[in-house]
Each structure stands twice: as structure tokens, then as C-alpha cells.
Image (tube, rainbow, N blue to C red; front, side):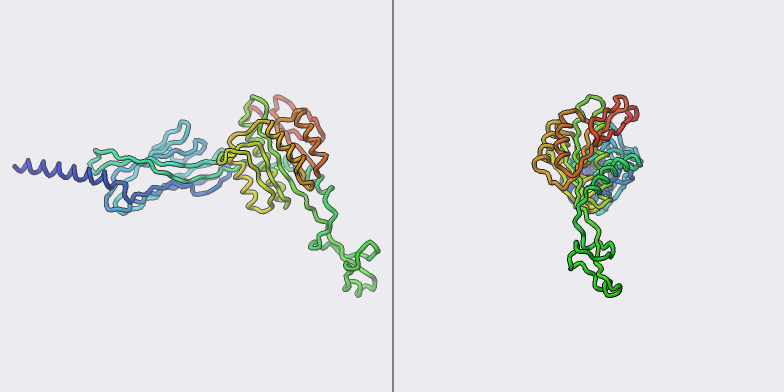
Length: 373
């Protein structure tokens, strides 16, 4: 009789806890996976935070949290993970009732892009580990991996060529806030420019002289259609790095910078552009946009962009064209743009096995070693 009672109690406890877990295992359970940083540069070290909050009395002795992270991330701890098209993790936790558990997964970012963790798969077991319980929950976390910056004299020299041209064409409008000095008065100066203190001190009429100011702007036009079949993805990355580095260079010179490209935005799935700006945050805006490029339209779309700049672009703009494609149809349009704008320069990346033909004086080749790709 005692054995029957013991069996009955055991069955009752088993069925009771099983039904209890089925009804309540995911109540008050919150799982969140988040990138610690919103944006990173390549080779930066950061981490993903896993947070499990079990806000109920019922413990979860076995809880598995599964999610996919970008394959291009190099994680320091590869336990409970496997890599195929993505980096898949299956982390095990044991969470008591009313307990919060936090775990950090350190990684190094390697490749430019915009990455998200959109969903999490959660599995658990009942107290006797016989019943499998599972659910999918949404997750909203993203990170930008910015393009590499090019820091060398060769690149600075290329950018400084256009900067020198801009300086030579700079506006002769004087900036009343940039005082340069005092000189003798002559009839070419307005009487309002007279410095009366200097005049009284010297006995001769003296006038204030100011530095000229430049209202020059730089617009970067980026073409990602190489019109070739050889390692086009790598050439796209080189072109994007050149655009990001050029924007960084000119913004550091306090010049307004804008970007247009035939690249496709991963979020909007359309071409878009970044308007002029000069602040430090504007560089972040540009890099975020360049990070989101996940493909491109064809060369005809870039031709349309050039046509729009010829017909509608501002006159006080200098253009930096970045395009590995540099055939005559494009060059003829750039000739027209060059005649209208304040200045134009082109950087054309090319593979070293192909060589480079300089078709115009404003074109600068940028050699890329195909064996390093």
C-alpha cells in the first residue's frame, strides 16, 4: 500500500510540476542580447551582453539561449558555438527564481558593415528534465562597423592636391571675424575700416585688414560599379574606405562635406546621400551610411547622379570622384562637371595586374595589390 501511495505521489508531483512549467516557465522571463557599443572601427574589441531576468518564483534549472551573430566577428570564447554562414551560439544557463544573470561575450570586429541580432531562440526543461519547452522572442540590437581609414602620406598628398586647388580658388570675401592686421589707408578702403586708435597713435590713417574666407564645400561622389568581374567586392571595400578617409581628411580641415553614391542602403534598400555638414558627429553620420551599403546600382545610376550635379549642383562645390570605372563615357560627363564646378579630382582604384591609364589631368590612380585581397 505504501508503495502505491509513493507511486501516486510521485506521479502527481511529476504531472503537477510538468503542467506548472508548461503554464509558467516563460512568465516573467525576459531575455535580452545587446551590443555594448553602437559603432566600432575595424579591429576594435567590444562585447555582446546576454541578460536573463527570471522574475518569478519558478526556477529554470536548464535554459538555453540561442542566437546568430555575424560570421566576421572573432569571439574570444568559442565554447557552445559553431560557425557556418553565421556565428551561432547556444549558451546554457541555470537561473533561480527571481534571479538576474548577465554574461559578456567579447569579440573583435573585422569587417565593415551594419549588423543586427533580431531574434533569440529560448529552450528550457521542466524540473525533472523530461519536457522540452521553447519559444522565439524578438530582439532589437545593432552595431555599425565603420570603414577602415587610410592613414599614409600618399593618400594625404592626393587629398591635398584638391585642397590646394580650392585654396587658389577661394572666395575673396573678407571675414570680419578673422583679423589679420593693420595697414595704411588708401582710397580702395571704406572709411568704416579705419582703426581710430591706431590712427591716433601713429598720426596716419590706418585701416583694419581681415583674412579672406572660403565658403568651399566638398562633395564626394562614390561609384561602386567596377564594370569588371574580378574581385568586385574587395574593390567596393577599397572605394568605400577611400570615401570615408577623404571625408575624414576634409572634415578635419573644417570643410563642409557631403556624400552621394549608387550604393544601396541595407535599411532603406534605396540609394541615398548625406548632406553637407562640418561637425564631428557628421563624420559618424557619413560612416554609418557607408557602413550600411550592401550592394549597388549599375553605372547608369552613377551617370544619372553626375547629370543631376551638372544641372542642379551648387557652384561653390569641389567634387571628389571615387570610381574604379573610368571609361570615356564617364570621363566626358566629368569634363562637363569640371567646367561648371569650383574644382574636381578623381581617385580611381585599380588592380596592379591591370595597370592604369591616366585619361585626364584630374585623375589619380590608386593601386590595389590583387594578391593581398
